[in-house]
Length: 239
Image (cartoon, rainbow, N blue to C red; front, side):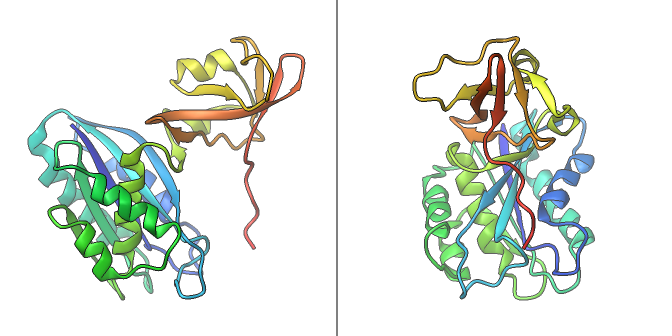
């Protein structure tokens, strides 16, 4: 069973960590029968009417569970994780769904809506009817981003990985074959270029963040020279 656990608005403007890091830390709480497949960051609408700490992004932890009856336990662990680690002044939210639940299309539609329109908590509650959605402090506005993170990640064609198979352990330059062994697909964005060869080198700028495309991690690259490529979308400085 694949479980999607959305977190949002767990930090404050003075925090030294964001929701993404809290989501990655959830791996420590997983029981032995579960494996964290990855953590995906989802970008939502930036708008003057939407309060957010820095970028209005939320995070979804994707967990593979050995048994279908583990959903309730994972939900409890996620709630305890947020209640223990969310910071003062935050408005945390948690959303949990699985591929064994009813059709997730309504959640996906809500996630897409959150990328282009200002939505409310009532909208989130309607979209998650039958799924777990809970607020854990402040205004509880985090339920909106948490629900959107689950819907967009379950869709399989949105967001970027902030954790997947030790992606943070790779060096600044890595071969295509090494990424393939880590189950990260490398694809060229060159108009007429050949796809990267297994021995070709990818320059990551010490910031390897594959996209979630086709329900799998995909690293988009552009050619920089013979046997040398660079990943697309480098890290941006805050502010």
